[in-house]
Image (tube, rainbow, N blue to C red):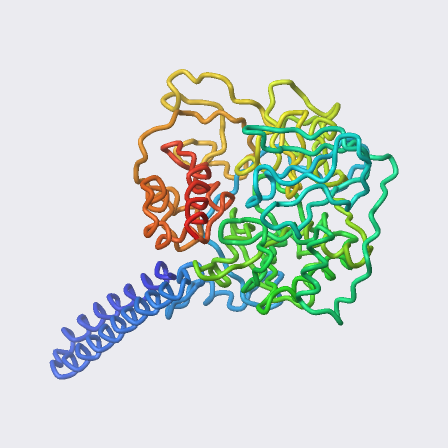
Amino acid sequence: MRTGSTRIFIITSFLLLSETIFAQAEKTADRGVFTIILMAIVVIIAFAVILQVANSLMAVEAKKSGIDPEMAGFSIFPSVNELVSPGKRGFSGGEKVTVLKKGFDIKLEGAAPGNIDGSASANTFAMQPPNFRGIAPIPKVVVEIGDNVKAGDHLFFNKKTPDVKYVAPVSGEVVAINRGDRRSITEIVILADKQQQYRQLPAFDLGKSSREELANYLFDTGGWTLLRSRPFDTVAGMHDVPRDIFISTFDTAPLAPNLDIVVEGQGEAFQKGLDVLAKLTPGQVHLGLNAGGKKAPSPVFAEAKNVQKHWFSGKHPAGNVGIQIHHIAPITPSCTVWTLGVQEVIVLGKIFTEGRWNTERVVALTGAELDEPKYVRTLAGANVGELLKGNLSGDNVRLISGDVLSGQKKSAANFLNFFDDQLTVIEEGNYYEMFGWLLPSKPVPTVSKSIPSAALFPNTLYKGDTNMHGEKRAFVMTGEYESVLPMDIYPQHLMKAVLTNDYEKMEGLGIHELVEEDIALCEFVCTSKQPLQKILRTGLDMMNEQG
């Protein structure tokens, strides 16, 4: 709520006015005038109190409706910024901007420059069933080692939903079907053809077809597997009809790719993907746009049609689609919404514009341990070691599919996760710190202002590593999580409810609104070094199993 400087100004003005009037009354000794003026002051103060109570009641009602009044800017009292520069909206063209005041940007070395390098390539690719949360650990595989497949051919399906097919990202020979714990299938590896071949998909008239016909078409072509359902962040159910669909067009995670670069030249496919999504929901397709960047968003985003646009400004995690959902139309236990990334929307659109399953995507190779961070063009599920060949500056490194906060550790023999468009390489923090935080150390990214580099040089780029700078400790209440999570949720109370298996508290505290990436920054600032993302996933799985 906007209470600070504006209200201080009002109260100070009242006090100064009172002092002036008292002095004037003493000089003139006019008790009648003094009494009238004093009564007027009392009336003004009483009116100010009534306004304050009304403002507080409005905040209470906003919270009951699932809206954070501070984040939404609900207040009777105008802010100083509104008084000084009313209507200033950056790139939004006068539309409302949701300004998120909570959050933190982790500034790391190794960002990719803004051009796409064609030198990096991969020869092997994989479909990884664990990337698609909600399917059985052992799906039904319909190919064998040695089979030749085209991009878009069926590879496996979930036994509970056999109509939904998971398809090959590339054409080539199936060279391995790797298994993990309890015989679960972890990877179906394909050695790609030098010249890609595609399964020709049947034509589909979007305008003349029903939603049911569209859904059946997406089941067979692989398009349905791009849709992720919330709560729980699982593959969309066959019979689910989402209340709304949400897409964020910018990413604020550390070293995240610039999605304006990703979408360049893909305007037709992106718009077609939006049109397909609009037919799958009776509600709205919501597009989150960046109002706080250095440049205006790509025209592909800003001029998109058949969507409802929302502008956001703030530090990470402002770009997370879950944060945007919270401020647009929060998730409740009784509703279902779907989310997609920008590159998934493009792949979905190409099913209709190209008539094929084309998973080509731009991936950002980032991190201080790369000789040359860059953007590369590849296909979904590319081999990590092949993408990084000849580009590592050392051997003691951590390879991460995704960003440093919520990505997954990989080895050079592993593959990029299906939904990831970032590969991060940082130093492995396998060293011991004598006396830990008690002694001055090298500059590290931190929210703490007690470290001079963080307090005096906020724009410094750091060479981060994986060292946690401490061990797991007692789970203490600090208020750190709430300071970086721009949601009307108490994450620390929620985490403790998960640990105690308190289903009612988990639901009441808003677990349905969160997935791992939303809580990742809280894990970064956690003094107790708690694995919050793992705890949250445990709670989500428990709630999902309970129905």
